[in-house]
Amino acid sequence: MDIFSVSFALFFLTAYILYYTLMRRKQWVVLVVANLVFYAFSGWKNLIFILITSFSVWGGALAMERFALKAKERRKEPGLGKEEKDRIKADTLRKKRLVLLAVLLLNFGILAFFKYWNGVLKLLGLIFNTEVQNWTLFHGASALLLPLGISFYTFQSVGYCIDIYGGKYAAEKNPLKYLLFVSYFPALIQGPINRYDSLAPQFQTTHRTGFSAMRRSLLLFAWGAVKKFALANLLSGAVSLILDHVEPETPGCMIVTGILLYGIQQYADFSGGIDMVLALSDAFGIRMAENFRQPYFSVSLGDFWRRWHISLGAWMRDYVFYPFALTKLMQGLGKRVKKRFGPQAGSVIPACVANILVFFIVGIWHGAQWHYIAWGLYNGLVIAAEDLVGMRFSFSGNSKGLRFFRMARTFLIVNIGWYFDRILDVKCEFTALKNTLFSFQPSAFLPGIRELYGSAFNEWTVCIAAVAFGMLLVTDIMKECGKDVRTVILESNPAFRWAVYFLIFYLIQFGLIYGTATEGFMYAFF
Image 1: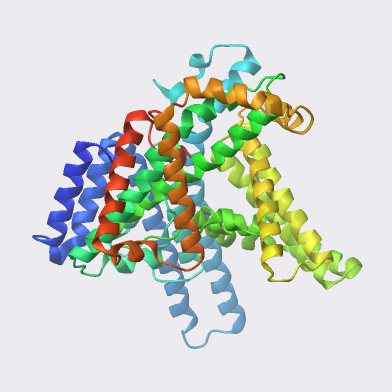
Image 2: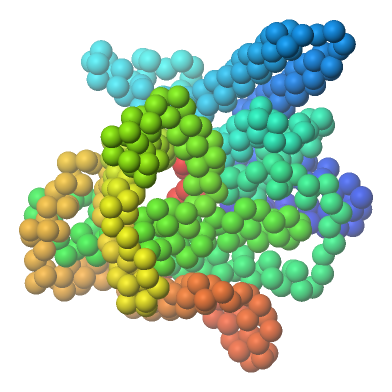
């Protein structure tokens, strides 16, 4: 169900009206039903998998909590010695680990099957020199489509299960209330990855609406639509023409142009989509996790990834980075390095290894293609190098000149990474990098732009994209300076406010007319 379709508008308005009128005392029930209806529109078979995830994690979490409670009661029994108490504790921990492992294997197994089965079929076809269709497990398996939001709801569920294992909070007793958390439809579109202890209490609160809240939600949704339709979709055609087929003779100046346009396209598409889903959630009084914080103002690659897809970075930090860094293997490595190179190196080196692992996993999460693996390793290695250099040299200072230099350096590093992310063939990636460095051919820039102008651009698309990009730049600068852009607009004089409204409206309209038609949001396919 496209969020710009008439069917989605009717679905959302129905849920919204029921939420604040007839079902005001049971608002969470409205959301549960709305989630299931929304997900059914993406394919009723997909409901099977989200229900498996929901009930397996809910049941596993309850089982782990009951094991812990029973062990606590048994340890309080009179006459038990220390050895018996330790045995009860160890036995309980073993049972909890088995349950956790079963839940992780089941849910990551489902995710891996959908994300990587097509790649496995192709590999088997190459190995055995046979047609891919002969290896299908069931009809249509050779063309598996990802269930909507499977990565996001799987990560949310696994994070919850690990938190219950660690005793962070009490397990949810009501399976429907837990299903609400897993299947919350704004998050299914393209994230963010929410945390149970942040989202669940909001579902239990009775929310009220008002004109002011509605205006803020509508403005955020409209601004997200500008980024998506008046910028990302308008640039999509040009980016594809330049980067889909990089040849040895492709001039470096055009490759750089394509990479810069891709950086804008991806940021506008992803952050625009996040703005829209946050606005939909805000309309119900539910605040989801922040996912963007002006990433192109970052002063290091590590800082960039703490600002881009914040919820994924936080998930990887809490459930991969720290657990791996605290393993006996990494602790042993840290001690050996500390003994030989000093305490600072002893803490930095294990963190470097953990960062490389994290970004390798993030690359695999994007897709089981070599270019994503190369992109993940590139980011992990660069961040590891930054940490190592920072261990040896100090770059402290708050001067504007130093900050601008570090921002420019980070911008360059990030855009080199986009070569691996967007150019789908590893050989072509290195051809593109070689041409960028050794065959830039600035004289080919204007002829290349004229060719794009005739095929991917025209007067309207250039003007629309330029205005939308200017607005994006201004709003990001305002946010970086600590200003609430929506408040500034909504509290400004009526003439300026309505001028902004009309500009946004016409940018969306022209973007829909002249932009390249795309199938949803880029990150929805991860």
